[in-house]
Length: 523
Image (cartoon, rainbow, N blue to C red; front, side, top):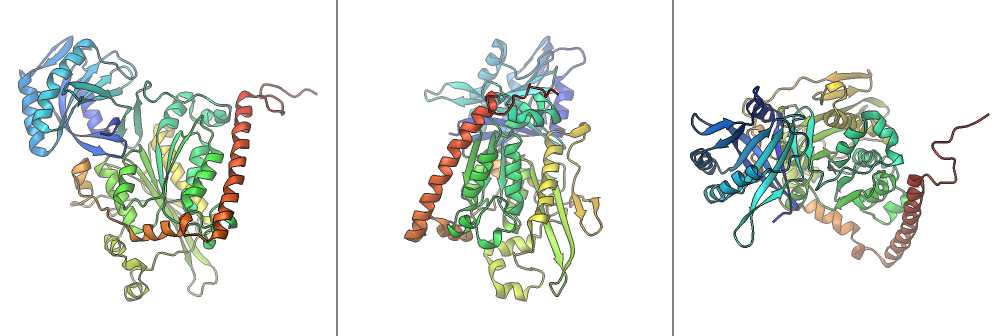
């Protein structure tokens, strides 16, 4: 069983629950809802899907609030018919921050936990809303070895809307300690927001010219849990746009995640950052399972298949995906640039999916999954597909990275109270920024599966291209000369990391040979 638990809900469900649970008379209230599980490698998330308010006679409000067994049984039966689990929610009107359970809270939830499991097959999820600051807390009532039920506290509760709001269990995920290297970042949005922002785990999928820069900058901003996923190998044609990558990396056939780990770790400013690297494709079942452990994902891939997988995940699993890219248009004779554009948008419930906003061709997805997009004969016979290689250079890709990071800030920080703005496009030739109008198709198959989690069909399967790339940079496939060179290079990198660790400690303690931060110049 996965050891970590969490809960996610949409902003619309959150607003409806607050309307019911926070009463004008200041008393507690209670209700039930249904959820579906979303299971990653280390984390189980309950995805709230529908609120089921009590009917007359099914609950009493008397300072505290209580419900009847008939109400629980009615909703449990309804949930079982839909393949859902049950959530029991109540309010603490004067509460603030993550709430521990009172004795009556524990007695009520534990009393119904076995009944709910027997009827639905899923553990009961309990949630508490703190009325003072609208913080959610949650727990899963799991079955122990001896058959007893026990509460497994969740690490966070995420509300997904135009702003990603996260409630944290400080006992399980403590706020990171402030560091001297984070002072300038904290001045941008304040210490409290920084402590929240730094704890939100982020997975960057695709570590090319855009993704590598995004990952390094997230690490420099103090993100404590950063995931990196790519199966590709550094090649000579990458050197004009992968900043920090050297000819040695291409010669030694280093994997992109290995190089990204080096650069991200060297630029990380958080205390004890967790940088997890995954030599996987998001199209593989193992890659998708890893992605479900993260609070948000930044998509920096340009192939249709992986983008389709992430497009679906954003809705089915309530994990916001920030997507975008860059396109360079050159003249037919190759002599000169006609234009360049870069786009960015957030994929989440409440926004049109990638296919609806015109950024994903479903026909190309099928071709990519079959391998046809790598077949020159197929491409030549289908002028609609222009292959997978495109013009790009660091001078252009930096703009796409900046656009993705701006969406990241808007989603997480909401400057001026404004969340993510919807799809954006910047046109280089005219230097214009456009807000793109996009609406969901009436029968969008992706958005129809919002909140379905584990029960929804996945678009993953073995990925032959990923297997080939992994073999290409596998140490065992290299010549003796390259293996020795890799070992020497790794030793040098290890020495550099020791120096970096020492320098970081010195800087944090303010004992460097340079003048202290508090010292002022005198004339």
